Amino acid sequence: MKLKLSLKGNELNAALAGELDEHSAADVRRKLDDALRDPDITRVVFDMRSVTFMDSSGIGVILGRCRRLIERGGSMNVINAQRSVEKVLRISGVYKLCNERSGR
Amino acid sequence: MKNYLYASFPSLTCNESLARGVCAQFAIMLDPTVEELSDVRTAVSEAVTNAIIHGYGNADGQVVMELEAEDDMLTVTVRDTGRGIEDIELARRPFYTSKPGEERSGMGFAVMEAFMDSVEVESAPGRGTTVIMRKRFLRDG
Ligand SMILES: Nc1ncnc2c1ncn2[C@@H]1O[C@H](COP(=O)(O)OP(=O)(O)O)[C@@H](O)[C@H]1O
Ligand SMILES: [Mg+2]
Image 1 (cartoon, rainbow over the protein chains, first blue to last red):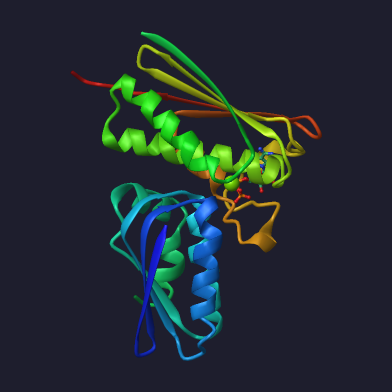
Image 2: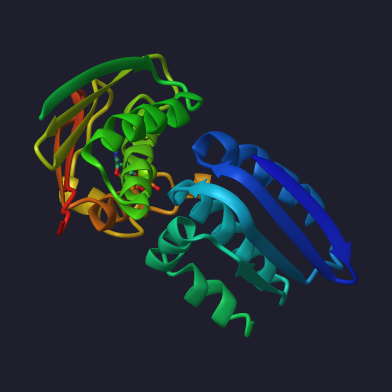
């Protein structure tokens, strides 16, 4: 799993690529939390375009970061998911919990 | 057509992708759609991850995956001889996780149920867990 982080103002864009499962989740989580130590970041956009596989381990990663952002009054968005990834996101209510709550 | 595969591998998270790869390759013989195939991959990943993380808790152990194909039906059995589940009904509830501190989503069983036709769980504390998942690949042709 590859993770490309880019910061534009207060928005962190996290472009993931490859397979997100339990095995790769720990590394992704660590890198994101490192980046989120910057208190000025108030918005994270997960670009899922190049994620070819994701199971519920990925949901844990996303919801965990979402919680941290909401705590600091920030917001999150998950975009561009392929169909199979989209299905897992939808079942787990990620769009409801994150995208909508944070007002897109 | 009848086919059968038995795989046994140590409880390492790097074997999650191995297991779903093997399973997908096996399932291809049943001529699934792209969507059906990715459903199977995801469900297998959930069951194997649970065996590794919850069954063995990262301790050493073997995870067994059995694949059976008969006509248009795929049966996937994932088995561990780890700690087992005390309350299966509770464990299967969406968002329930026994390890909330580790940021687990508790959606593994829910995903298996959504992506397969049926999911059976047999488990006994201290003895281990067996998950049996079935999916039929229906073709209107
Ligand atoms: N193979 C297993 N061995 C022991 N416990 C398990 C096993 N599979 C699942 N469980 C239990 O069921 C719960 C729910 O599993 P799941 O829905 O996959 O959520 P999660 O893995 O995120 O906790 C787990 O937290 C665990 O307590
Ligand atoms: Mg799980």
